[in-house]
Structures are given as structure tokens and as C-alpha cells.
Length: 382
Image (cartoon, rainbow, N blue to C red; front, side, top):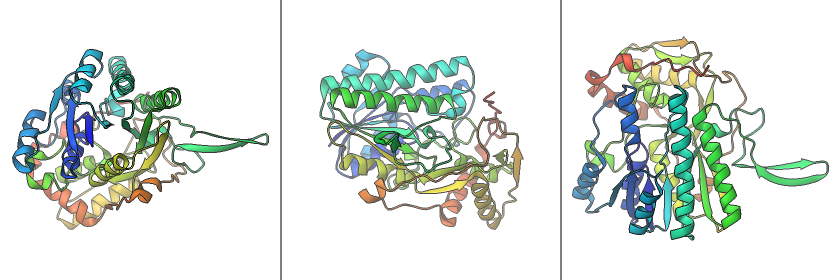
């Protein structure tokens, strides 16, 4: 397929682009370097420097022989969107192109406004571009398990059959986001569902849990192909942060009671989930929703895993419960369904001691670049 990856410079976008080319697909990438710009603005750096998108594509071409088209520009601007879709009319689109951080969205009014305008405008522009230039194309949108919140009933895969006063109907599963970022993801789903019904589009919405790790089959060929690895509170995911904190001798920052439970997945599984969704597309007029994770952990359980492996490697890892800066349930019921991607053939990579020890080894080699003052920024929801 001809696959257009929006947000192709990102933590997940870049590894996805490489992975899909190894599977025989024709891939182009689009980005505006928003994540890089926001990291500079709030003064947080990834653990190691990452080449720009053109440089990454050049390195990948030298290894794989694949020359990947690059488009740098604003997907919030319709003229640029038209240019991209006319130059590379896709069979499928992978939409990662959003401000990706819940803490950033809660920083202040300006950050909230940027999150709303970027995320919703890009999604709307993509919908209109698909209708105008490639109405049969399949769109794979990266949503988040955070859309569901933590309800006191089981979480189904996007849809819920409801019986009320003797009648039954299927609805989008009720959603209750925990941040403005997660709220924009809910609004994305609602936009997509409206246009799927109205224009007969075909869409897969992946409700993804927090991702960890940085190694894939493609990055193993050259360290300069590695994705961003943020360890700060704003752009770093929780397990990645804990690994860096363990190496830095910084107590693992468990928010509140630490009973917050979520579904997690290895970055390798993100790539396979996206590929399986693309290679088994939704039907015309279908909004297909998969819950994208492989196993669930509480924050306490993650911290204890990192402590155990870190201590076995000679680190002295401590855990510290800190005042929770977020508004969220710290102890709750959590039982989400996640069978759809397994049925398509996903073979999960679980969080093993070997996985953690390899991450810790890598971070130890970059220990001199860790800046402790960037780890915990105390971004408060209230």
C-alpha cells in the first residue's frame, strides 16, 4: 500500500514508518516538528539527540535502500494538506499528528488552546482531504485508552450494547477523559464517527495505552534511528521515566497511592498493531475500534518491577510517593477488553526482566546527559 504517516517524526511515527517499509509498503512521512519545538519551549530535552526527519530518512535509505518522501509543514493549514495529498495520494493514512501530552495540555491557557486547535483542526483537515483526494483510503487514527477513564464496569472495545426500557442499541462506549489532551482524543473519535456515518469513510481508531521502550528491529541496525526518549514529566511515558530515574538515583515518582492502573505495551507491539490494522482494513462506513495494549499494571507494580531489576544490576532504586498533581482515581476497578488485535495476529512482547534490563543498560550509557531538574516539573491539574 501507499501509506501516509502524519506525525512521522514522533516517538511512534518514525519507528512505524521504518517498520512499514520493511514489510513492502510505500511510505511517506509528514511532520511540523511540533514536539521538538514544545520541548524547547518548556526546557525539556530527550535523553539523546535525534537527527531531523530528513537526516533520519537519509540514514534509513543507506541501510534499507528505501527513499522515503518527506513533507515538512503545518497540517492545520489546508493549502499544505492539499499539497501533501496531491503529491502522495495514499491508500491508507496513519494519524499520529497531534500534541501528545496530557501534562502539557494542562500547563496553562496557551497550552490548552494549542492542544485544542492543533489536534482537532488536523483531524478535520485529514477527514476532508480523504474525502476529496482518496475517499476509499483507510484511516488509522491513534486514540488513547485514556478516553474511557476508569469506569466501575468492564471497558469494551469502543462500543457498548445498551438495553433500556425493553429496547437495545449499540453506542460508543461512554468516555470520561482525565485531561484536556484526552478530551481532544474523545472529540477526534466523535468527529470520525460523524463523518464515517455521513460520508461512508473507513476508519480504525486505536485506543492505545502508554507505550514504553525504544528498541525495534529497525533501530537495532543503527542507534541514530532510535526514537525520542523523553524522561521528563511532560513528554515522557511513565515506565521510560522510571527507568531514567532509577539510573539517575532519583526516587521513582509514584503519584499518590499508586493504584492507578492502565494497559501498557512495548513499542514493538505498537508497530505491529498499526501494521495489522492497515493490512486488515475497516469496511466502508465502519468506525472500527481496537483497545491497543497487551497487559495491565498499576503504577506501584511498575515501580516495583523497575526497583527489582535495577537493584539486581547494582543500582540503589528507591520509590517515593509524591502528592498527585493530577485529578484522578488512585484506586479503582479496571478491566478492559483487548481481543481484536490478538485476533488479527498480534504476538505480544511482554514486560520481562530482560526488557527492563536492556532499557536500563542503554540509559546507563547515557547517564551523563540526564538532567535531574527536568524530571519532575509539578504540572498541576487544579
